[in-house]
Amino acid sequence: MLNRTSAERPPPTEPVEPGGDNALVFEDRSDAGRRLAEALPEEESSSVVIGIPRGGVAVGAEVARLRGWDLDVVVPRKVRAPQNPELGIGAIAPGVRLLDEGMIATLAVDPDYLVREVADQEREIARRLAAYRGDRPPLDLAGRTGIVIDDGVATGSTAVAAVRSVRAAGARRVVVAVPVAPAEAVERLRREADGVVCLITPARFHAVGEWYRRFPQVQDPEVVAHLDAAWS
Image (cartoon, rainbow, N blue to C red; front, top):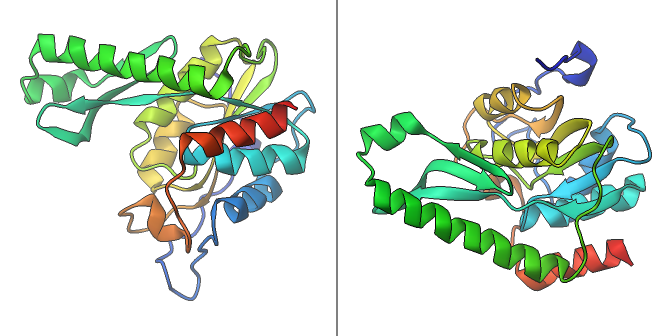
C-alpha cells in the first residue's frame, strides 16, 4: 500500500469555465510547461520528467528545462472499442495491460478482436519508441522520482498505464503533473500516483484543447527534437 501524505496532494483548484473571469487558459504547451514548473514541489535533482507523446513531451520538455531535470518518454496507448475507436476499453504501456473487463463484457467484445487490438497498439508503442529514442536506451529510473507529464487528461486511463509502467521500471516515486483534467480523472490518478499536480479542474470538461489558445497537433519530429535537445 502506498503512503501518501497530504503535502503530496495539492488542494483541488476551483472549478472554472473557459473564458470566465476566473479561468486559466494556457497560451500554448510551452506556457503550460512553465506554469507546471512553477507549481511542482521541490524534488531531488535526480528526478526524471517523463512525457506522454505527443503533447506531453512538449509540455514536459519545458518543465525539464526550467527545473534542470532529465527528460524521457513513456508511450501508453488506448485500447479501442470495436466500431467506436474514440471509446477506450483499456490502455496499455510497456510492461502494463489495463483492461476494463466490465466494459468489455457490456460491449460483448470479441476475444479475437481484443487480441488483435492489443497487438496493434503494442506494435505502435514499439514503433514510436524506436522513432523517438533511436538506439538510446531508456533512462535508468531505479530509486528516482518519475514525473509523468501530459498536456491534459480526459479519463485518465492512459495516464494510469503510464504511471504503472514508470513504477514497473523502478521509479521510487511517481508524480503526475498535468495542466488540466476533470476532477474525477484527478481522483483516479491520486489512487495510482504518489502525488498529483493539476492546475485546472474544470466543472465542465469537453476536451483538453479548449483550455489552450493555441493547440496545434504535435508530430513525431517535434517529439524527437525535444528529446534530442534534452539528451544532447
